[in-house]
Image 1 (spheres, rainbow, N blue to C red):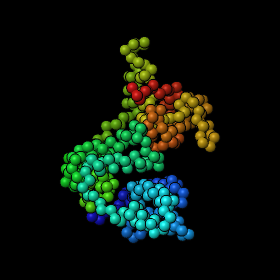
Image 2: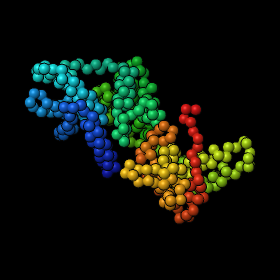
Image 3: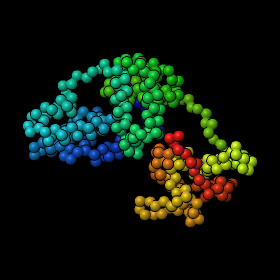
Image 4: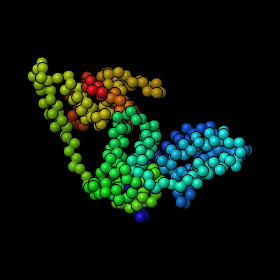
Length: 351
């Protein structure tokens, strides 16, 4: 099925390819001494070569790895195997025979009867051995990455009959259980294609690629609220009887500070918990000190959003600086929302 390119998906392809290039450069730095990775572009596609020295000659050989995220990770694993083999074999003939069998897998008969359970385990291992968009190694102990694994892959895989051999009928049954045109339909199809890609079943992957996953149904956005509505809401939350023990004023005020930071800086909730200079100054890598938000010297109210939150999770956008978005109708918004005196809620993620 030929893909029709539009300006939008051409841009999407470029962004995806740039991410692959960035990942490839990062992986190149991790190859063992004496073995490198090289990109080879052909009319049929882009592939990865292993570069190493045999005898007095530096050579570049195919390693049966496409230029994909999975292919790049596999190429690194094969580079490590080649490095070990170069130190073990004394005969070039023996080494090349080993290379054909182990790296190129020429004499291996693939078992197409792999079960869904075995395939899901391979996808999970591949996920945790891969890298995030920020080119950071995934961490099994990171709650946000655990959530990502579940929402992108496992919530669909758990619907498969795990004892059955991988087959298109069972995968289509799970895909068809989702509403066509909805986001879940697209995500489910992508998850099944990923499973086929990881186990090397190109036939099934190509069959699933024929499915039209264009999203045509969207949830109504119920998350918008006007600034006037928020200010009224804030007043009502703080309008409680003085010293009434039924209400925790400090907790209410702290959570309103979180919401107010979202209003003023356009942050996600978890990004507020990653702000580094709420009540202490922050020193950048190049030695520049950014005053705390509660300091009089921080006249521009520059906020430093870090890579990680104080909840033990990571932020989607990573480290950056943010400045307030003040509407002309409320020039005193910083003071009105008491940003300079705000404190984060006391949260223990283990409780």
